[in-house]
Image 1: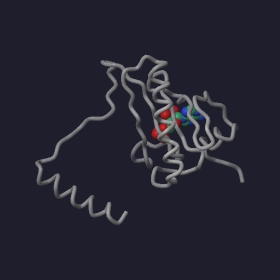
Image 2 (image 1 turned 180 degrees about the vertical axis):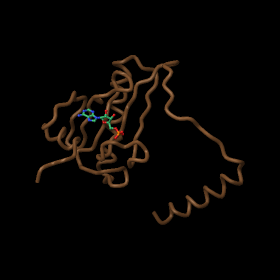
Image 3 (image 1 turned 90 degrees about the vertical axis):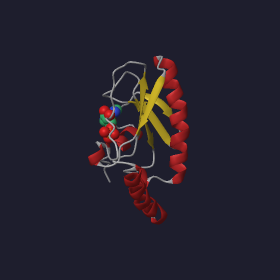
Image 4 (image 1 turned 45 degrees about the vertical axis):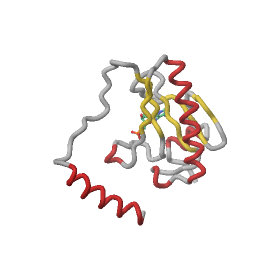
Length: 140
Ligand code: AMP
């Protein structure tokens, strides 16, 4: 059956990429449309659409790769910070439905604003919401 997933095509060598790390479980390569030069993607070779679909084995391998590639990106670009970001489902901004982690090198004062933070009315509102989420965590 023909593969339609763009990242599976990269893994299979059908689409070229600028490879950073290639292990039996994980591939890392430069994002074709970088937020900053050195912006890397770390993906599991197992096809999983979101973080919820990823096997524990792949998850472990991915995090080891994030540490290796993250250090390499920082050292090579001279970055003094690194954002590790990951989107799930279209509403979060996920464009490629093959789970992946963005590694974005940062320097002080680079002007990149990733999100705008808000506030709660108070601790009571936080506790009510936290309790509801905690209940779901027990059954999830
Ligand atoms: P997301 O919005 O989290 O799904 O991010 C998907 C990322 O994949 C984007 O930053 C794209 O620039 C990147 N991307 C898509 N196609 C390719 C490709 N062929 N090679 C490298 N990066 C890609």
